[in-house]
Length: 281
Image (tube, rainbow, N blue to C red; front, side, top):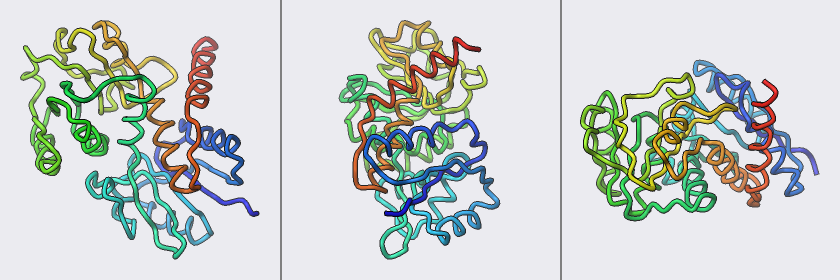
């Protein structure tokens, strides 16, 4: 058997843990594959992707700022990718056509529900931000039948556009940050990248319900500002997106290779490496 080639495209990309994750998956499942990270800006995405598949590449992950371009590039889309209007996984099919999928929502649900036993049915969920990351997670969250799903954004119009697009799947409410006073939520998800640079939107101190949880879609080797906020507000769980990263990667791996890796040891190893990294700084 020959080695088959996969990659993640994005800009910036040097920080990506995806090559490490897929190497661990390949070793665990005895798959002969090579996975690299390639710096690809938006203006060269189409040329780079055409070249990758023309050279025999079998699958791509696409991260910031390429997910919407990947959505446009795919010949066919899964239903979840069609709804999200963003693609993070491209699959070269047997006939040479390219399938686009979005595994972010599944990755989030697996981390919340399976890894951390956080219930979503009947709870009040708040999402901070109305960008592409939010589009990817709203449909699977609505499938879990929360009692409320609210998107807060400085530009309420962007949040309302998402609510309109997903109205057939369930009710989505929108508001600005000033309207959060006197509201409480069982799960608050940060879908902005602001906390990586230490910034947070204005969040009332009583926003998190007793026993509630916080989840930052972003991840870093250090504790993010939003995870710190959750800990300071007595969250039962205050988590970053490393588990989601591994879980969405496992879904992509399954699409490419037809085998589902065991994510738990990979998440544990990466978390141990982060602790080592932070102590060696």
